[in-house]
Image 1 (tube, rainbow, N blue to C red):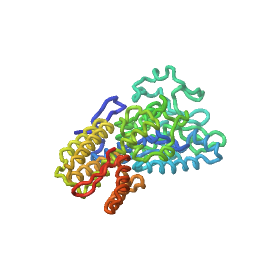
Image 2 (image 1 turned 90 degrees about the vertical axis):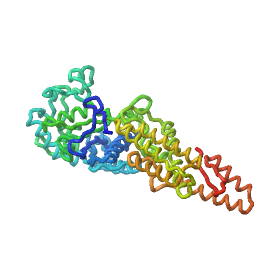
Image 3 (image 1 turned 60 degrees about the horizontal axis):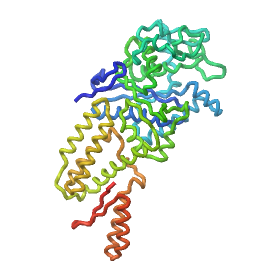
Image 4 (image 1 turned 135 degrees about the vertical axis):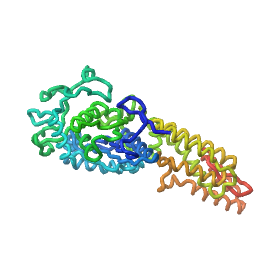
Length: 467
């Protein structure tokens, strides 16, 4: 089996073949840090975390870079409103970003470069673009990329420049030679944060920072470039133009874009106010529940967010956790003789087949639920051996290297419910020994109402979850 990925550049699925052996260079566009993460950011972060995890699961050596845009108009305006320095504001939200992704179980990228710390690299790249005939300086000291010098603008969108112009809302700027020319360097406004450059004081344009960081921390051509599909135009189109103008080489072989998280039919965004912050949602749900919610949908499609949809996903995940906990509970006393080798093998193959098919986590999770349905049947029939329980647990934990949805090692009291059920069973046994049957039956009936069945067998008392 080979991994196939949908490539936005070719608009089709392609076999994934890295440029160099099993080494993968992957750059993902990060957040503009003027506020806390919202759930749309969480989807992006978790999707690419899943992709990195699966590539490593398949034996690839991945170097993962995600940037921070820590200086732009939104940051400057928000900092001014709060009486802060722009870089002070962005640094605060970068720290909060790391707190949030840690709670979401996201494995941190290898490098998190910041625009403000990449000024020399940005200036060097702009100079190359100008020297190669693709950039020009305007009267006010800004520098623009001249799009008409490029013949194949629009490769990711599949549109020609003249088609993209039709009906487009383009900011009027007399300094530009063409409406679609974009800023590589913005001349400083009075009182605005700025850096020295050959063209005077100013700051980077938005697109150039990613091209420069990708070039600095990875290479001129990388394996994977990723982000949300809202970045395809203009951000990623412009990245391609800049990088190729400076280096004369393709920027990336594979372009991976995820669909947008929607609320009431519109993209979740801070600018429109229709967003749910990750911090608020984490007050109601675990990081595993949020991960499960996002990974239960295919990454390329849109996903509609609502608290009700997240609650439904959380209930489904609890069923998976219950089976996982019950398998752990019977490890020491399962009396069956069935090792579940066929079920485990079938699931592992289904998992890899699904993930190799354009990283279809939705299908892979469906296969995981088929496995736990089989496990529940075996548990109910007392057919499962201790080794069988161990085999199922092992494969669940193996694929969870990719999903990150099983209970974490550090569990809170709610997650440790199995230990409390064991304690209640011990109390019930003691009450029965003392012939206090009414109280013992109250414990049995109370647990049954909460989805836990007590079974009095010749080999002792057992319990299992029924919901």
